[in-house]
Amino acid sequence: MSAPRDCAACGLCEGRQNVVCPDGDPLSPVAFVGEAPGQKEDETGRPFQGRSGKVLDALLEEEGVSRSSIYITNTVKCRPPGNRVPTKEEMAACLPYLEEELQGRRLIVALGRTAARDLLRREVKLSEEVNKVTKVTVRGREIDMVLTYHPAASFYNTRAKDALRETIRIARTYLEGRGSASSTGT
Ligand code: SF4
Image (tube, rainbow, N blue to C red; front, side):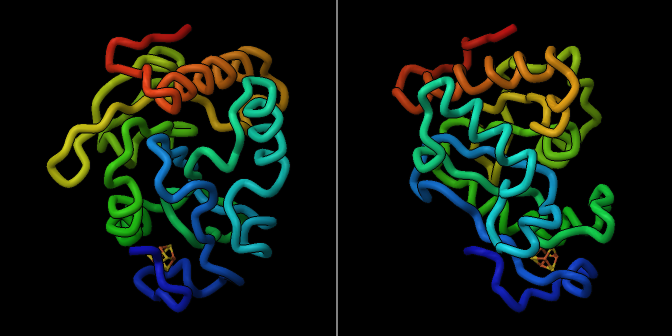
């Protein structure tokens, strides 16, 4: 169940140009989940198209992972005004679409604190939890999940970029069928 292009389940429908559809392989074992669409994504209807997307694409390529081999989506599918953080209510309204998208995945990569908080339903401290594989329950089924920095955090932060690179290495083990809950990173 993708979000319909005329979805009006929350107030974010009012300012959007496009409902941003997921990208990549719909059957991939690995799903990357970001926070929310930005301006470029709103214009194109595709996730991770702007500067953050370029950083993510470059790191994927460096680590030998093709963007078409993973699934990429966001916690909310419509751009919040001024790129603000989506509210709890907006994330709750969009959660059924996200949960549907995550069915059958083996690993969820939460890009940034907002995505991690939405999925785990608790506060997270990224600096302490980054690249530790944990479990998240989605519609009664446990799925491995790894928390990492949003690509935007790596614009000026080398540590965040290195952590994201390590996350991609973890994701690659799942794509290759080697990943497990015992995987740990930096
Ligand atoms: S953010 Fe999600 S729930 Fe809200 S209008 Fe867009 S698709 Fe619908």
